[in-house]
Every structure is written in structure tokens, then in C-alpha cells.
Length: 389
Image (cartoon, rainbow, N blue to C red):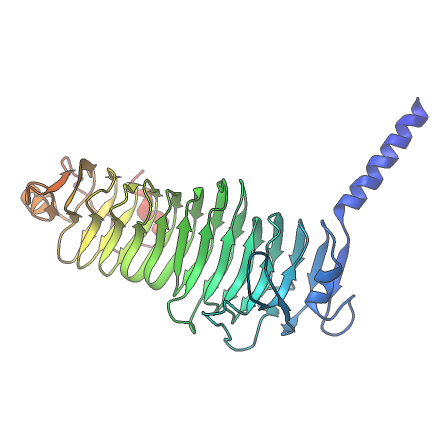
């Protein structure tokens, strides 16, 4: 009996070693198993880890993705599930062309392609100068990566629950009308985390994801920072959106999207947040919203009921709240906020609701209101948020 137990333990140990997978090294100087990334990917098995050393990896191959009717160029076409790719650092391992080479019409080249629908983990690489930095479906687990000057930095179709993007930088200077993050649900996508990431000069798109959290992120330098549609549920926690020319966050193109914002700051030259004619709704607490020339909140006809509380609402000109024409009558609850003044008549004059135009089916609750503003200048955003607690 004891001998059988030892045999069982030995078999379990062998199985564990097999499931851990092999480690394949890609080194430009020839000290590894391969010098070209695709050569390593072609021999990799599920569960393997590919270590990529420092240098510029400019080699690419022609592939045809499942469901596509034309070929594209890929710098790293992943063919197996449960693969881990680890670079030497996002400032040392560069994958993709040395100058921008993206084609909008062909969707080529792409730096990393993966269409198997399983898991892909990636750490410490820079993906650059292509139509897409990553183009994949499945679950993505990514840490400490940089995306530089791709037309779409990350095109991700998650399936099922889980996945994260942590401590990554998304930056675009070269392509026009770029997209930093494009996450489109392909079946039950939920419980996704985007944490401590920087997104600059490009739009973030979320379509149909039932549970994605942006935590500790910064977005800036674009027209609209985030566009949510397809009945998504998005959480924005401890984030800063600034230096945007039109909108901080837009809910549109699909019914029922919800965006919950806590402990965050959103500053836009026109409007901080907008719910289009789609039943979308915002729930905001403990945050600072600034819409300088148009409105803090735009709630078009057909918008869901929005709620903002314990927050600082700032404007330069125009209205604080603009409610669109038509739609089902709805009440937006904006009580217990600071509006930049404690004069009720002034606050009332900055709200455009059904009392101003009978055709607008909306009511805005704003009283009682807070008598203390979040200071415009402070040592840190954390100090500002502490005033609400």
C-alpha cells in the first residue's frame, strides 16, 4: 500500500513538471535557443514560457487569421494556449518595425496575433509602430508593457471571466484617430482589471463587457477619453482624466450601459461625462467633475437616471447639466454636491431641465447642496479625495 502511494506521488510530480512547460529563450546575440521570435513560437507547446532578450526584433511573417480572407504581416503569431511571453523590459525588448508602418485598409502589420481563444500572458516588452500592438481573443494577463504608436494599441476580444492589464503605458503620436484600448465582448466577458496604466493621445473603447474596472489609471491628450457602449458595466476608481477637448466619458451606441465613478477626477474642455440616447447611466461618488465650456453632465433624451453625490462640480461657462429632448421622463439625482457656489438661484440657473423646456422629459434634483469645495490646489489628489470621506 505504501509502495502504491509512493508511485502515485511520483506520477503527480511528473505531471506537475510536464504541466509547468518548457522555457524557450530568444536572444539576438545567439546565446539562446533562437534569434527570431516566430521560430520560438512555431515550436512552443501549451504551458511554455518564451523569454525574449534585449534588442529590436524586426522579423515578421505572413499569416492569415481565422475568418480572414486576406493575409497580414505578424511579428509574433501565437499558435498555442496558455503561453507566457517575458521580455527583458519595455525599455529593452522592442517588437515591431522601427518606424510607423500601419495600414488602416489592410489591418496590417500586427505585432502580436493570437486567435486561439485561450490564455496569453505577456510581461516587459514594447509593442510598436503597427496597425495593432496586440490583436487577440481569449484571456489576456499583461504586466509592465509599453504600446507605442500603433493605430490600435490593444484590440482584445475577451471570452469568459478574468484577465488584466497592469502597469502598462499606451501612447500614440503618429497615427491619426488612434485607439489605445479596444475591448469587445465575444461571450460572457467580465471581471477584467485595468490597473495603474497610462493612456495618452488615444481613445479607449469598451463594448459589451459586464464588469471591467479601471483603477489608478490616467488618460489624457485626446478628444474623448473613454467610449462605453453595448450594455457594458464599467467601474472607474481612483483615476484621472484630463486634457481632453470634448468628453471625458461617453455612454452611447447600445442600451443600458452603466459607469460607476468613485474617487476620481475628470476634466474636459467641453463636458466631463455624457449619456447619449441609449439608457446609459452614471453613478458618481467622491469625485471631481469639470466641464469647462458646455456642461459637467450631458444626459440626452432617453438617458437613464444619473446619480452624482459627494462630489465637486465645476464649470467655466454654459450649464452644469444639460438634459436632451424627448425620451421617457427621468429624474437625475445630483444632491449633496458642491457647485462652486452656495447660492441656490445661481445653481438653478445653470441647470437645463424640463422646467426650462416642457419638451425635455427630465428633472434634476440638486438641493440640498454642499457648502465646501474641493480645493483647486493641493499637495495630492489623495488629499483632495480625503475631504469627501
